[in-house]
Length: 358
Image (cartoon, rainbow, N blue to C red; front, side):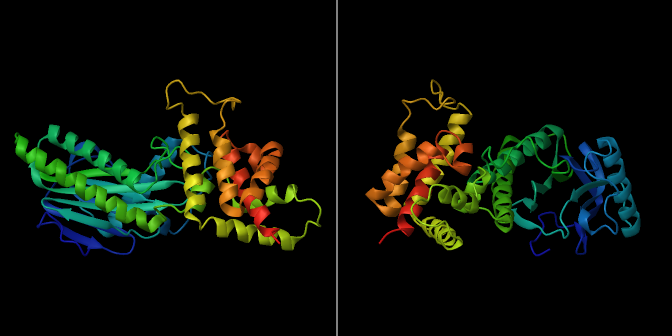
């Protein structure tokens, strides 16, 4: 581990799949780790990658109860502990990744170790080490500060939006664990303030660095994927209203290439991102007094978005094409909300108009 851990007498054993931190005096912990929840005392902290197990889980999702899954994971971990000679009692974090790779940040008396894994869902584990003896009340405050810092990093990196991320729908094993050197009866207000600030800064920085390895911040194509729109979908929608010429694969290929090219235009991207954010706010009814669930006729700013995109790509003639796509709503466009149907109708109309320019 390249970063200097703030607690100097921690001993570390590490291989590709497992990191073990232990100290003779142990740790006071608080967290929602895989094994070792609540406030407790442990001798060792283990972070282990699940995917390296010799045999896959003998069942598919939904075939067994949650209790059986937890029991099976605990038995697997206990076998790992025995094999590696980990001293009990133990707090453990189980990662769905093949290899355990930390991003780490040390800030004064705090070290944050973060791992992320992004496949079907986003998994984040955070281990915070504090070079202090802490009382239970302070541990709880630092746990909350860690959650706040994690969410701030998710916001910084564009992870939080309801299309792609629900903070209440994370992987079962996602863990946050705070470990201090031991317990005490008193933590002064000045010490608490310093520790909260250090945790917020360290966790936020480490989470952001770790998310950088998982495709964040996102590009415009990923934002489009979040709302269910692929470039192939747009090409299919564009081809539906092609008239006067034979609908060939060559035309479809040109249309796809034009879509990709248009998505390099900052102004087009700006309208798309604005449309996605606006759609989310309207869908969640975040603006009091505004309800566009039925796509009311007096809502025309969405059409302004669509016409602006079309015009940006291919000029005035594309606006007439926009009206065709907006009214017919071919393919994927018919499945989108009141703002995004116009946004992507404008993108398709502009690109179709551009490829047929003389």
